[in-house]
Image (tube, rainbow, N blue to C red):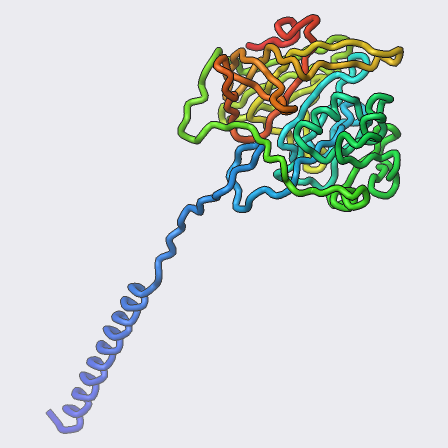
Length: 348
């Protein structure tokens, strides 16, 4: 073999060796890089605080007092704005067979609440028991006296129409008065009221590991107030979402802000004495004496009782302890004793 050819072969061998060495080093570098890539471990963050009226865990302690607003429930006022954000909705008769809603807001203040309607004395009594800041537009004679006497901190659209309260051009009065969420704090400042959570009232809730399947199976429940079907409502339990949807007047109840249906964890019915007190058909409702109650949760129904404990309306067990609620939103109906809760509420 000639010297030149031999030298050429040596050179090629050297190149092959260098090439192989570079490849091995590169593979080792990749392996080292792969080994040193940090692994991200997602830890479940424990939320240390529980909301007073929904029983849900949150990162920060609730510091704002409850807000209660009278919300119009006339068919011309539907769908209402902000009801999907309410911790609790109370529904009860005003005049005739027309019901109104009281929305309790604390965990979340929506961008807008309404349409806002006028106050009644028993609305104010509920707000007083919860030490809530009360919002209404108008009042009955009895309610006006209570508000003028300072029974509750409040702001009323009669004094702040067009300023704190805004009129919608999409609806006609009296179904078009709203309060923007950002105006609630401004309204409290106007009337020199604190929004700090001082009277620490709350409901009682199940822990995640507790069994809530008690009572009779009941996937649907209907409340009949009589008269117009517009104020009769049906609740249907969905096992997949573990919540109740709602229809009123055969129309699904949604929040006008989100266009989403409301989802309820608990539905309750409190039987109360009702009486007509004037020629306008205004009512007196006994919210103090206690009585029979029906509780619907997790597709089950059972009969309990309700009591007024230092101004706070609660469902109670036979032994007097608080009924435990499933965490989430609650809807509470006040039902007249005549014809009674047994006649007015049907379930299957």
